[in-house]
Each structure stands twice: as structure tokens, then as C-alpha cells.
Amino acid sequence: MAGKTIQDINAKIKDGSVHVVTAEEMPDIVAELGPDGAAKEIDIVTTGTFGAMCSSGAFLNLGHSDPPIKMQKVWLNDVEAYAGLAAIDAYIGATQLSKSRGMEYGGAHVIEDLVAGKSIDIHATAYGTDCYPRKVLDTTVTIDDINQATMFNPRNGYQKYNVATNCSNRTLYTYMGTLLPDCGNVTYSGAGVLSPISNDPTYQTIGVGSRIFLCGAQGYVTGQGTQHDPTNDFATMMVQGDLKQMDKKFVRGATFHGYGTSLYVGIGIPIPILNADIAKATAVTDADITVDVLDYGVARRSRPVLRQVTYEELKSGMIDINGREITTSPMSSFHDARAIAGELKDLIQKGTFYPTLLVERLPGTGVVCKPMKQIGEQPTVADVMAKRVITILQGQTVENAAKVIMEGNFNHLPVVSDEDRLVGIITAWDIAKAVAKNKRDKLDDIMTRAVVTADTSEPIDIVARRLEQHNISALPVVDKHRRVMGIITSDDISKLVARR
Image (cartoon, rainbow, N blue to C red; front, side):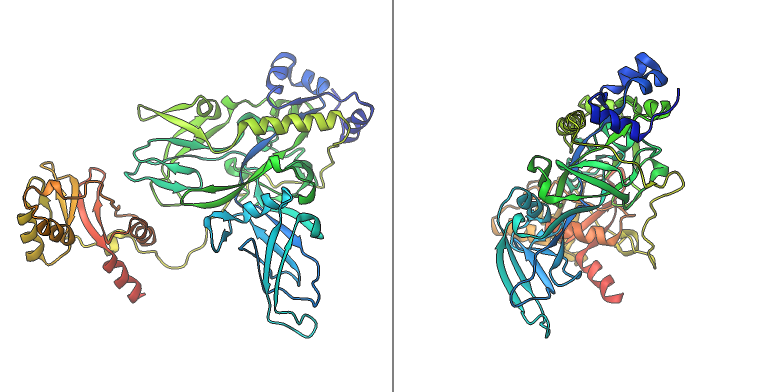
């Protein structure tokens, strides 16, 4: 069949004869009619996604004060925005944290509050010039008081997201939520069947100039997103839209415990069905979209892949990892993604939303996301740890442990089982407290059982962070069988830093 054009479809929108379905409905239509028949029958497929998109923010023009100020630093509700643009322009990033409230409030919440019509306190400082003499500014505004408020997001709408679990023995707090130890849970994100780019993976209709539904307003794709990686099916988009036209239902600030803030962004993209190839692409299902399950317990960019899963499996609520059934939970909202696809469908059918012709397609296969170039080797635990470690067998007395520590002149004594596996740790301070309380019997009664450990291959920066998080001064280094390979202390790290 001859293909349709954007102009043909827009004419049908105008006269009310356009046939629009959501991406959830399209697979059954293609299965029944085939790609050619579906392309003839359907004009537009709507998609939707609603999830945390950290690489988001807004440009704000605050208007000139009297006397005028050239802002050097500016804070909105105590969240610093970037002011190195012009006198009274600023960019507020979603993940920037409040000075006073820390991780509980950040740039994402400022953006949500602006869209909701709430008042925002502004504090700005400057060095002062002849044309901009003011040095301090304090005021309160709403979004209506601001000249321009443009959401501009460098990276949104990932084609799909890796799945996260945690095989270590400690709880992790990540941008994928709280990950329980020993693969206690699995988290994932993305809309699967409704994902915009998954429905147009070759970018025949998505690219520079594509009109999109952005948080309730009409926005645009302005280019490839940062970290665009179509070679590995992790394409992204750069998008923008008018913050003043947005709906607070689809703009939500969020805090991830132990990680920080992010902005939940609602995006819907219409896929014009110009030909049978596009119709076939929009027949993608949750069972067709696969993604890797990664072990976030390994603090490296290239984390171990435990297995591949489909979105169909993830949405079932349970997946199998090494013979264990693990609960899955989404970090994004499929309910809201469906609402966005439905709302976009209604707007098109009412004649208030028209798809646009591309100016340029997004870059395709051959483009990859490169890691950061780093000069110099980063030391690992194996480079710094003490390899000669004295241990003590569980069941010994406090008095025995005290003698071992005194003779060895150290502060930390790992406790091992008969199989030589780490089961606890004792410190000189623990022994001092036990003696003061006249507890001199079994060591097992006073040792710390939930031992925080390290791996020989971990970077020193990660280990230093772990020591700080747990407010401890040493980590036993263990192998995969929990046999003690060494020990690393805060003193070891301090000496390394002093040498660098």
C-alpha cells in the first residue's frame, strides 16, 4: 500500500476522521490485520511513560529588579540554581539538594511547586557592577511572576532501563530505590509496551522537532539525549516545554532515601503510522522487550549481569534468579503512563494536538555511550589492605580476645567459624565495655554479627564511603565464601590519601 504523510494524518485530525489507538491496543490490531492492514486502518499510536528522570530541570527568567542585579549565586527555596547564564536567568536542576533540608527537598520539588502555583522564595547574591549595582536580593514569586519558565531536560525517556538487585550482604540506597541484601528484592523502571522509543526504535517519527506531550503541555524533542546509546537499545531524548502550561499531575518531585531527589516526568509521544514498517514496530509487547538484571552490590560501572528478563516477567511481580523467586517492584508508574497515552489520544481526537514532521532523525546504530576518560589507576582494596590478619575462633572468651589484641597491638579482631568463615568482629572498645560491665564469658555475646565487609577488587573511594555510612573504622576483606583475606582501616585510607 502507498504510505501516508503527516499532512494526510493532520488533515484527518482536522476533519475528525482520524483513527487513534494506544500502544497497548496496537499489538492485537496488527496480529489481526497484519502490518499492511493495520497501517491502512490506524493513523496514530500514542505512547506514554511516567518515571524518575534525574537529568531534568528548568530555565527561569526572573525579570530585572530595581536596582538591577547580576546574579552570581541564586537559591530557590534554599536550593541553589545555576546562575552563570546572564543577569537574571537561572537553571534549576532536579537533583540539586536544599542547603537546609538536604535530601528531603531539591530542585525537583521546586519545579513541582512552581507548576502547582506555589510561592517560591528567592535569595540571590552578586559582586556588583556599575550597570548591576545590587549585591543582595530577597523576594518571593510564583510561576506567573516569572517571564519564561521552560522545562529543558537533557536526558529523558530512556528506551528501557536496566533492572537492579543486590547480591551483597548490606542494604543499598540507590537511584533504583532501596535494594535489600542477598537479592532480597528487584526493582525496575520503564513503561514497556507503552515506551515511546520502543515503539519507534529506528526513529522514523521521533527526532528533532517532534511535538510531544510533556507533563500535560505540548513540548518538543530537541535532539538526542545525553548518554544516547541506540547500539545497546538505550536511546534517550532531549526535550523541552513550557512549564507554565504543565499539569501538576505529571510533574512530581521525589526523594530516594540515601540517594537524593529526582523528578517524575510524564511524556507521551504520538507515532504517526506512515507505513507498514512503523505499524509493525508499534506491535511490540512486554514479552518482546528484554533487559539485563544487574548486581548493584558491585560498585563498578560494568556490573555483573545475572540474567535477562522481559517486561512481561517483571510486571508479573516475581522473577527467578538462580533458582529463587524474587519480588519485583516498579520505580515508575505504568498506571500514569497509560493515563498519558490515553490523554494524548483524546487530545488528538479532539483536534487540539497535531504531530509534526521531523527536522532530523535521532542518531541510530553506531552511536554508543562512552565511559569517562580517567587518567591514572584508581587504587583498590587489594592495594591497601593489610594481608596478614589475625582472627579468633568463635566460642572463645573475652579474656582470650583481649590477649590477642594486646599481643598484636591492633584494634579489630575478626571472629571466624570452625569452617574459617567470618561470623563477627570484635574491637578493643567492645572488650573495654565488656570488662567494665563484668561480661567476661563468651566472645559471641558481645561481638558484632552483622559485619560490614569489603571485596579485594573494590575501589578505595567506595570503601571510604562505606566506612563513613556505617560510622566504623575497619572492614574485613572477604572472598565469596566469606573467608577473611585481609582488613582495611580508615588509617590505611588516610595514609594513602596523604601519599597521593
